[in-house]
Length: 122
Image 1 (cartoon, helix red, strand yellow):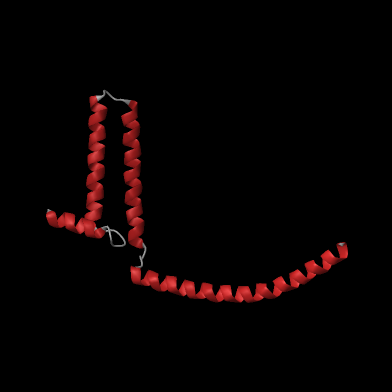
Image 2 (cartoon, one colour; image 1 turned 120 degrees about the horizontal axis):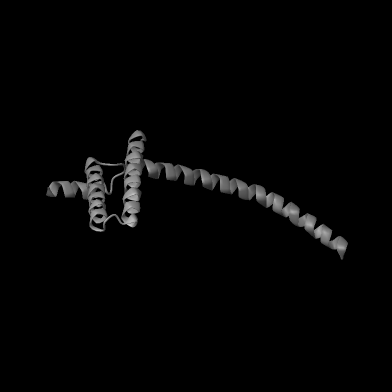
């Protein structure tokens, strides 16, 4: 039992879903729905608990769908994400330097044009 909680805690820091996380999710939703069913019974069918029950059930269905979608997608680990970020940074630096060179030329031309137009107005 303690091993389950250790693996559950470790799965929080890993990409994707683990079996422990999925089990904990299902157990939590079952406990929530059972609590809401008991509250519906205890309050003689309060409409608010029916609404909460429906919302919780729909949320659980959505979470199950999302977990299934995650299982179909290949997630990147931290090393791959760092490599991609470094590549993007390098390409962004190159583009910025090229843009600055081009904008420097166009800015000086624009300033000359502005200076000429100002002198005509004066």
